[in-house]
Image (cartoon, rainbow, N blue to C red; front, side, top):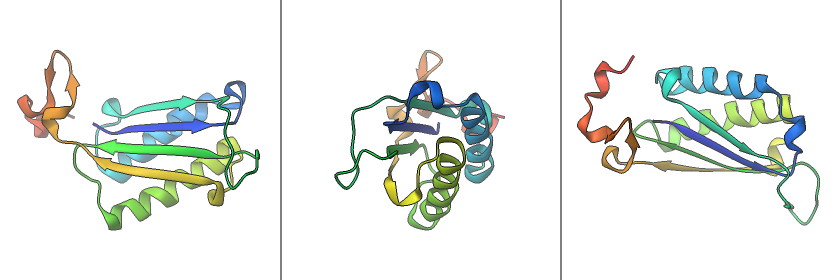
Amino acid sequence: MPIFRVHTNVAKSKVPAAFLSETAEELAKAMVKPAQYIAIQVNGDQPMTFGGKGDPCACCTLQSIGQISGAQNKQYTQLLCGLLQKHLGISPDRIYIAFAELAASNVGWNNTTFDAIDLSTLK
């Protein structure tokens, strides 16, 4: 299900728990997916620059089984950039987000892969 990963030069100690919980809740709404299956991972304290400058920046990925398309990705970008700016102080012009749609057979969970699960029963 959805996995949002953030690599940032913002210190780990500056990443509030509210960022994780709010991002999971908002992504669940936007992607119409159960929040319990959304994973958020933040890798702070990364040595990185954006445009040659060491100001706060982030390189992110959003992966999901379904719900990844051009029109939706614009909505997700706006949402995620807003959350990164609100909680981590990263300007949207210093954020990249790469999107990837995953095949259900390529995502393992609970001793199986999602192609073996009736996704309509996950609530």
